Amino acid sequence: MEIPDWQARLSALECNHYMFEQQIHCDVQFRVGTHAQLLGAHRYVLESRSDVFTVMFHGPLAEKGVVDVPEIELDDFKEFLRFLYTDDGPVDADNVLVLLYSAKKYNVDTLVRRCVDFLADNLCAETACFLMEQGHIFNEDGLRMKALAYIFEHARTVLGGPHVHDLCKECLVHVLRSDKLKAPETEIYETALRWASAECERRGRSDSGWDRRVVLGSAFCHIRFPLLPARYFLDHVMRYDVLTMREKLELTRYFLDSEKYPLQTFTARRRAYKEPPPLPKRQPHLPKLSENGRGGSQQAGNGGARQADAQFLSGSVSDVRQRLTARQPSARRVRMSFAARLQIFESL
Figure 1 (cartoon, rainbow, N blue to C red):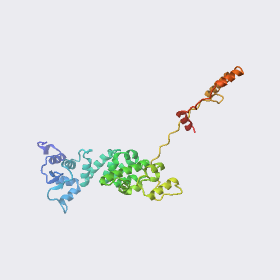
Figure 2: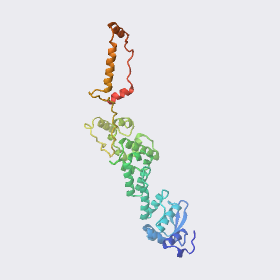
Figure 3: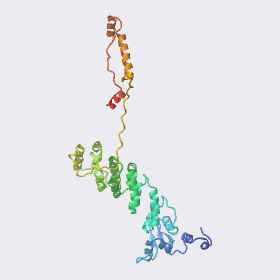
Figure 4: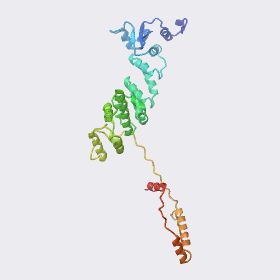
């Protein structure tokens, strides 16, 4: 929007911004994006904010004509230049990565810090792997380490999600080799296999056990197989071709007798993850004791049995004999209920 008498009404900063928006007296032209659209700017402003632009316009290989920026689209490059003119502008999920790329390319550290702070503030289980990878790509160790620390602390949630595939192999090694990873080794092993399966697909390789090991490369040796439960190792590792016969033999001997057969290839060093304590067993229901120390219900039951015996033996001998003849043994044994068996088992 044109502003009448803008030189008198606007501040110096607003005047510079207005000249950029209205493309007034621009002395440098950029050919931007895949459609090679032209965008003008002012060398004085660009050089005052970026030493890269200073070298670009005044160095031994100074640009004399139109400057080509084919990898950044027009709207994104305008957002970047607008920040150089005003030191302000929105940084959001839609433009943060392209702004970070532009700021790194032209060495605008103030914008780099804003983008990195925005990404760090949005760190969560869904973004941790992606942000670690972006920190690696842009050589931002602060962002990478923050994301890595989050992955260590919330390993079970992060590794169980699909975003672990965003990691390159170098970043995956940083995750798998750490003692700070709070996840059981079974989940770490399965995460490594899922990453390898996705990498096989990206490379166009077959998704076999040995191909997974090949694409894992140096990351494979950071899986701590001796920490796997022996039964899990037999059921889920031995049957697949991710280990050589020599490695399978070494691990099998270790599981049988770790003192007699020490490890040569793998490490059994524990990670930060701790197994949750087992659930307490249910205590069997015991009858309350009476004053003399015997169970009240048992005492009542014994009294009723004595009374029944006395009634059974009352009368003449012939009457008792007749009652004995009438009493027949049970034809089949009474089966104990499952609940009764479970109670006896838990009380052992």
